[in-house]
Image (cartoon, rainbow, N blue to C red; front, side):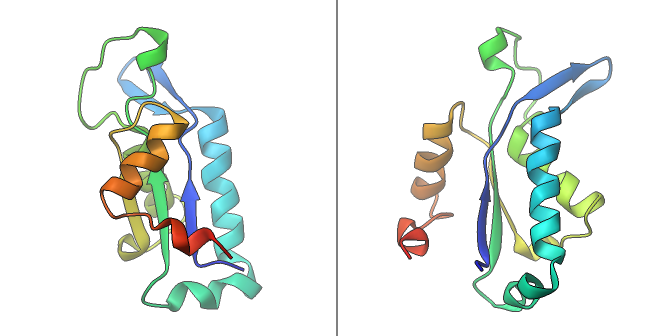
Length: 122
């Protein structure tokens, strides 16, 4: 059981009024909610060092769709989903929203001190 979780971005979909998480992105966020609310895991998230790191920048860049706003970032959309759908406390959520690939999900998170690789070497 871990109280340090990273959710990788999984793309976004363009809607008439903006963007939303892709089906895979919603699935990843929902899996975290299942993990978080499991009775065996829940207590671990009461720790001062617990977090869920939501990663992903502008997920439509590979589709050659021009970026339209800073709010259209996978990490932010995932964090909003966790707070609004899952009632996850904001104090548990970290966001990395600059990346454009899985590799930069990690490197940006490490550079911003949101992620310490040693936390995952168990």
